[in-house]
Length: 340
Ligand SMILES: O=C(O)CCC(=O)C(=O)O
Ligand SMILES: [Fe+2]
Image: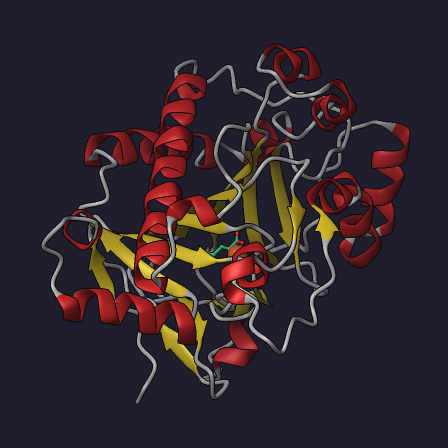
C-alpha cells in the first residue's frame, strides 16, 4: 500500500461513531509516515488568522527594525533570527517564543526551581505589536489542545487507554516557533534536493502541531521507502508530526514523522509550530503495552537531559563563529547576509 498523509476530521475521529475507515487511515499514517493533517480540530479560524496576521506584520518590518527584535543575549530560541545558507543567501527567518517569559514566570507557573533557568533569557515581545503576547498565548494553548486530542486519537487507534501515556497531572513542556521562508530566486533547478530551505529531520517532541500558509506544497513528509510526500496546503487544516518521544513511547510502533521544506511558490511561505512534550522530569522509555516478549532496544532518557543542553548542542552543530561569540558574550546576534 502506498503511504499517505490523510486529512482527518479530528472531531469525528474522536466521536463515539467514528467511521472505521477514518480510524484506519489515521492508524496507517501514524504507523507509516508519522504525519497527519487535521480539520475540525477545535482551534478557531479567527485565532489562527489573528496570530498569523500579527506575526506577519512583524516579519514584514524592514530588516533594520527586525534586528532590534533579536534576543538581547544572543539566545538562539528567543525572538527574531535569520538563517543564511553557506553562500549567505537567506533560507529561513524565525521568531521563537519560550514557554515562559522569564524564570520568575516559570516558577510562578509551578515549574520546579531546577528547571527555571531554562527561561533565564527573556522572550522578545515586539513593541510594534502590543497585542501579540496575548494572542500568541491563546494560539499556543489551543495548539497544545490539538496535540492532546491527537494523542487521544492515537491511543484509540492503538487500542490502549490514553492514561498509558505519562502526560497527566504535571506541567507539559513546549517550544514555539514561527518559520518564514523566502521565495527562491537563486537558481531554477528542478531537483527538490537543490532547493531545501529546511533539511530533513524529525522533531524531538512527542507531537508537533503546525500551521502552514503559502501557495505551494513546500512541506514534505518521508514515506517508509524514503520517498517524499508533499503536504498540500489545505485551508483550515493543521499538520501534526509525531516526534521522537512518541516513537519511543510506542517502542517504534508509531513512526517519527520525518519532514523537510523545499522552496517554490510565488509568496513567502510561513509555518508556526508548537512542539509539545511531557513534563521535563519525565523519563522517556517504551511503555508497557508496546513492549512485547522481544523487549526493546531503547534506553530510558530523562527529558530534562535533552532540554538542558539544547542550546549548546544546537550551537555546536549549526552555530556560526560570530553567532557563538555573541552567545558567549551575551549580546544580540544578527546574521550577515550576502548582498542580494
Ligand atoms: O515549515 C514547516 O513546514 C516545518 C517546520 C519544521 O519542521 C520545524 O520548525 O521543525
Ligand atoms: Fe520540524
